[in-house]
Every structure is written in C-alpha cells, then in structure tokens.
Image (cartoon, rainbow, N blue to C red; front, side, top):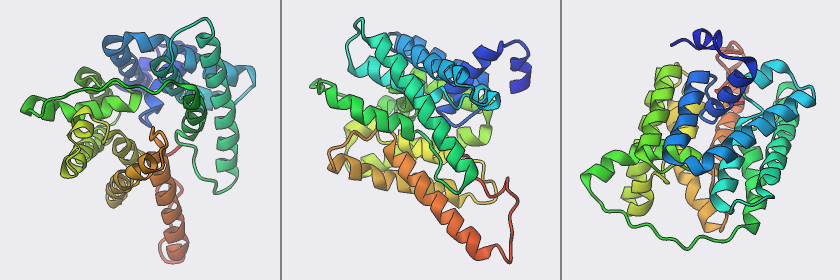
Length: 304
C-alpha cells in the first residue's frame, strides 16, 4: 500500500508518531510504523507504554519548540524517544517516576536531534543516526541494576530459522520471531529493497556469530541487529551495492570493540560504521568530483 494512500486516512499527529516507529528502521512509512508498534504490542506489551510515551514526548517537544513540521511529520523527533522508552521500560522497574523519566528522556532526545540535524544541513557534519538514543542510554544504564538472568537456547533447526527474524526484532529489544516477522512485513511494504538487505544482514550477523561459536548471540539475534541497521542505512544506493555490504561488515567487526571496552553495545556499532562509511564517501567524492560528479540524491546515503 502506498504511504500517501494510508496518510489520507491518518491524522497528522498519528502519521508523525507512526513515522517515528518506522524511522527506527530508516523508513518513512506509517503502515511500516504501525506494524512495528503492533510487534511490541503482541510480543512485549509491557514495553508498549514506554515506547508510546517516549515517541509522544519527542513529538510534543518538537511541536512546542517550533521545529520544522516536515521533520516532525517524518518522525525525526520521535524515533530516539521510542527507543529510550523501550530501554527504560526494559531495564528499570515501573514506578511513579518512570513516566516522568521517559518524558524527559524523549524530550531531550528531540532537542539533541534538532541541533544535530541543523548542523548536518549547514555543513558536512556526521548524521545523527541513533546517537541521541545511545548517548542518553549510556548515562541512564549507569543507574540500572545489572541483569543476572541467563537464557538457555537449544541449537536446533527451528531456532536457526527463527534467528534472522529475531535479529530484526532486536533492533527494538524484541527477541520474539513474531516481532521480527511483523517488522519484516513492514519493511516489505515500505521498501522491498530495504527488506532484502535487512534480511541478508540478519543472516550474515547470525553466521558471523556462529563462526565464532557464539551460539547464544547468534540464536537470539543479538549479533545481527547492528548489521541490519547498517545495511538499511545504505540500501538505497542501487548503483553501489558494495556500500550496504561494507556497512554490514563494519558493523560486525566493530561490535566486539564495545563489548571489550565494557560498554553497552546498543546501536553504537551501527552509528560508527555509518560515520566511517560517510567519511569514506566524502573522501572518494572529493577525489572523483572532477571526472564523475554525482547529483545530490545519488551522493547521499539513507541517513538522518
């Protein structure tokens, strides 16, 4: 279904919020966002309140502070808030202070995003990606109680087949294959090319973890989600398929670095992989601009 057909029956505020969910996967498509929201509802309903609250906090902050409506409608001020709401709901017990904390985190992420977007548009500043979410999460997780719960998962054909779907779901802290299937359906509706790259990246992440005999990470999808995001960021580059492949490889290679440093991985490897590739694109672009200039559309990866 085309996004504009869905938009005609969708109020502005709902479209902006749903686009915020879809922007987690670097898409602007409210139906994709709806399927992401439903994935939370059906597989982790305890996280849904936090996700909605974080997304609304970012959207309302952007509206009250007069940020560009086009950016609000695109979901640019909501997706970091959604991720922060999910993380806080997952790692902290609910209390009377929790809604206030989610509202504050979501609002602050919108303000950071606005300043970042302004610098990107005025200069060659590196794109924000999910940096506001990661930076705020690193601070918040300093106050979280470490989890000691261990999960046992059997190495079986069924679990191997479900792992790539879990890799999609883990982008939003969802380890259920149904969540991954719903997200995959949303990507298929929004952009079939992006769907193919995301699935390939998830399989690659699983294979990489299995190659290193990390069966726990492989079968829970924890080794895939950064590769998925890196592939999605460059999936629009039809004439340069090596970019998504390089993004996948970089994300997989960078992930152990954060674990070795004792830092929560989150989506930091995806961000760093995108920044490195963005820098490489700029360097190569300057080197070849005299002989093969690109149009602005061709010269921009799918980054926020």
